[in-house]
Amino acid sequence: MKSLILEIGRYVCKGGRSDYELPLVEIPSVCYISEKRNENKREEVNLRNKKEPLENLKVGNDALNEIENKGGSIIYPLSKNLVMSDWNLCKLIWEKVLIELGVSNVDENYDSILVILPSTGGKLIEEKVDEWLKEYYKFKKVYYVPNYLLTLYSYGKETGIVVDMGTFWTNITPVIEGISDNNYSISIPIGGSVLEDYLKLLLSRRGLNLTRKHTTIKEESEDDLLVRKILNENCFVSLNGRITKDAISNTTSYLEILELESLEKSVYIEEERFQVTENVFFRPHSIGIESPSICEGILKVVNKCPLDTRVLLMENIYLCGKSSLYTGLPQRLELNLKRLFLDNKLMGDVERLSKYKISVFDDPNRDVSSFKGANLYLKLISMEGN
Image (cartoon, rainbow, N blue to C red; front, top):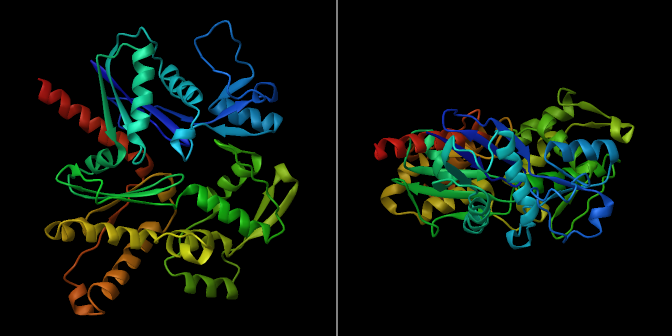
């Protein structure tokens, strides 16, 4: 019997089956609510309530199409502060994933489902998902596994550090022989939303004034979607910020002109292309973020772990999450980690550094690596059952 796989994400929810390593369905975790419904956001929404027409409410890609056609704003119901999340809207998004997979509440083709949980807040999300599944579905077995563990499994490993770079947080979790300990993990307030906020600031210096609105749940306009597109398509991580900055001063090789049709204007970006990742990932204090850099966070986690595991952990650092996909990031992390380790632990002794190996692994599909791990996990369960 096949199993389903559902991954809960703040920006994207994914769905698939146990016989596929990659997701079959990806639904943006967004809702568009018309002004009429927006006046009463607390009104309960239920996809199965046939008496209530849902033309005022759009979910996923339909929501993104609606904002392109009509303007307004979209809502990400899974909030940074999970307690403030709109769980009714979250359940609509999760249900949309299963519907697009062709699954109904009376479907007997699947007897189990594996739910991939985020690195943080997994317990509360597990409670809400469990409540929803028990109310509407009849799965015999439901498995809840954190994404960092499945990411490690996707590499065939049981020991390593998983750096999950998400929307609001970068979660750094050590796993030792298949077991994680929350006392060793840390979360730092660096993620996709910080990159977007900082890029908006940089673009404002180019004369591009972009709006930003916040409510108890994250609300976004067309401007936010535009900034995210620029980040994904034009920004990168420099291996050496100083050298890149010098190159920009002497050449035009990094210059790009963006034609912004929605704003009916064009703007050029150059230094911003690497400056946004440089300052957020590696120099957060320089832009007023009270947080260690990603590299400092990784070494902090290593130093928390038992002494006899530290060398192996440093040799096995794995990236995952949408915010980890920037070109040059894995290589830069390795360089900075070696430099920090040399300065802080080896007191500048270069000869001793050669005895240590620091490796950052970057699967090209690392934003969906947990799906590959989920596939392996279900196979192991099946073998044990037989």
